[in-house]
Every structure is written in structure tokens, then in C-alpha cells.
Length: 158
Image (cartoon, rainbow, N blue to C red; front, side, top):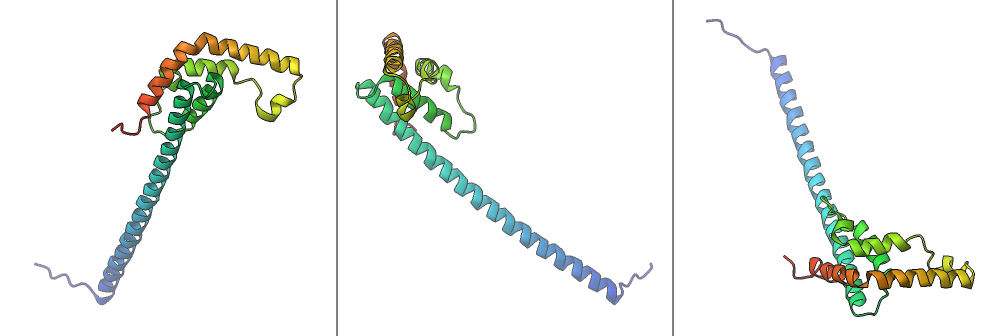
């Protein structure tokens, strides 16, 4: 049997290699821990944002059902809020709430706020009549969607 003796410089190289591995493992562990905490904070922020959006959706849906908010204004707001929800597997909201999205699609081109003031009164009246016609036409279907929204985004849903 041959006796293999490792010279002193071999032990130094092995010791240095082990030290490098330990340092790299420590650094990798710290980076993984930092990544975990960063992802956790991001998930918490996304969850909080969705909770705020959900509260707004519930409030607008309730106001629409109670007649405190025009169907057209509510549909515009809800469609945008649904679009802004941060979700991994985002549902097909236009298919789930078709009347709300149909109203949104029909009126999204109409100016609001200050942009509306730039139009002549006759044109504003025409747009209002068009919008009110859509509201009358879609009223029953929108109410169904609004009730479904309240159910889908209720607080006690587990």
C-alpha cells in the first residue's frame, strides 16, 4: 500500500477552498433570506392594494345598486379597478361581468371631467342622451353584475 502524504501547501489549499465555500454559502444564504423577505413584502403590498381595490369595488357596486351612482360612471370605475387588480391567474372579468364591461366599452370614449367641458353644450347633451340610453338598456343586466360583484368581493368570503 502506498502512503500518500499531503504536503503542507496542499492542506493550505484545501483549507482555503473550504473557507471560500463557507463564505460563499453564507453569502448565498443571506441573499436567499433577503430575496424571501423582499418577495414577502411585495406579496403583502400586493395583497393590501387588492384589499383597497376590493373595498372600492364593493362601495361602488353598493352605490350603483342603491341608485346613488349612475350605471355608466360605476361601470367605468369598476372596469378600471378590476383591470388594476394584481393577480397571478387573473379571471376573465369581461366574461364574468359582461354588462358592466359592455357599458364600459360603449362609453369609454366619452370625455369626462375637464375634457367634457371642452365640448359644445349640444354635443354634451347628445353624449348624455346616448349614455342614458345605454343605462336604460343595460339596467337589469348591470344590476345582476353588481350583485355578483358584491358577492364575489364580500369581506367575509374565505
